[in-house]
Image 1 (tube, rainbow, N blue to C red):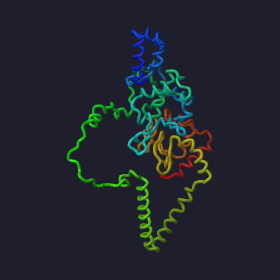
Image 2: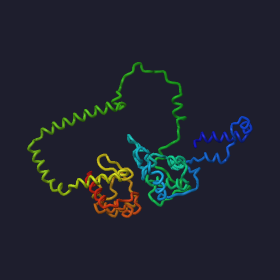
Image 3: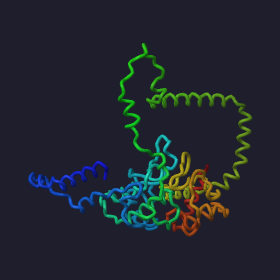
Image 4: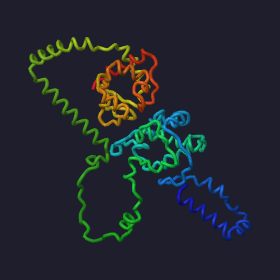
Length: 367
């Protein structure tokens, strides 16, 4: 409930309680609100935890409740479905042109998470979750955002205020009354004005009209490419032919050995759709809920730059785990058996042929 609405409700109750009851009855304007009615409106949660009901819930319990009530819109791991909001990931993107604003990357207070889930979710069935279920869902959202890393973590009204979201320090109180309002309400300066106005820049240069800028950039790149092709054409043809022949001869054995089965790769690409909610591959791939998988086959575990791995996976990496085909096959079959306490909630691929196909697809994706 907003402070304004609370104040209005409180003032209305006070008016009726102290002298306004008779007038209200005479004019037929209503009656005094009961404590129960006021309590039904007073459900907001403050950042310091004030307003929290008693209750508790673990990450593991929250995963089950989330899948039953929330995953249809937000995905199993908070990755979002279709145009429904993404709830996890987005770390380090707030300075990007298109920042991903999630609970873990943008929201300042955990109280907002609890309050919103309690007040408005699940969509179409709001206020149907018990306090314990809301605590559990909130704990799970902390887990998929890497704020807690233990499936056994339990969130309750007792430890709630101890949790801090990463972006909290970047929020501050609205200070426009003290800074901006005085600046824009003072008497305007009407002295020492310029006699003439000079144009110092154009909109296209300032990227106010990005279409023009993009077109100009495309023309420049095309001209540069044409110049490069012309310069390349002047290279000695005999030397180029010899180099090409030598490279082809050296590459032939390796290509024959590494050539994947196209049908198996194509099938693996289809199976990989189960993974795309969390993992990306290829040019422009970025870490999401899971790390980039480009070039994963044959790479050491826990080596993708910029991704925050679970303690369990890092321990495996320290033991020397390398993602060769055998290790990938075992992990994909049942992740939680191969790496106990892994954050990866995916149950695994039961069919051996599916695992072989996805490994072949990952092998085909080079760095």
